[in-house]
Image (cartoon, rainbow, N blue to C red; front, side, top):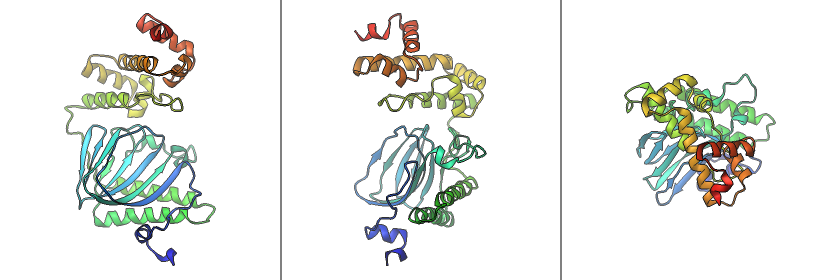
Length: 297
């Protein structure tokens, strides 16, 4: 009998909508929440996320704030490098989410990287307000993904990737809710996004998650601009070079880890993205005139 119920009806009846064979690099679900409002800060993850929010809330997405009205649902595309925080206002809320890694989505080298997609790239169009017909289309595609997760079809993940692609293409056709009006020019926008992205790499909280972006070229790639353009914009707006910003932030984090953790010097080096501990020693001594061990003592 339960297989004849809709996704929402199954949730209300307490019937699981996904089996226990969900792979670690993908998950999809429908949710309903009836509780006090909550606030969700941004945390670094390796997962991209597509989520539908129905219920009044605020999304602090990168450098912008988006208000989601009670009768104005939103669909959001989150990049693991793009910072956001989420604050609910309405106690009754529901929606869908799908989380997945680049490896799950991009099964061949011929596929476009998600980092290059206009929906997921930093500074791209990430938030949309679908009308009733568009929301119905997105909801149907999420329902189909959930149904595939419970199916025994051997190629079901290929089907799920197809549904994800359909969601992405449906969203690309829409008008985004975010815009860049707060910036005077492109260089100011690029510099602000660089500073925001740099800050969101920290703090380093686990040895299992090393620093991902360490060089100006890494940030240029993440921001989808040429490294020379990034360097020019950051220097023009802040008066400091891109490399200086990165060095200063690395030193600040290194000092904090040396003071407040019992991690070994080698662990700190790896956590900060240095390939070898001696490279970290040289970097630290060059910029502070003391070794990491001497600073810790």
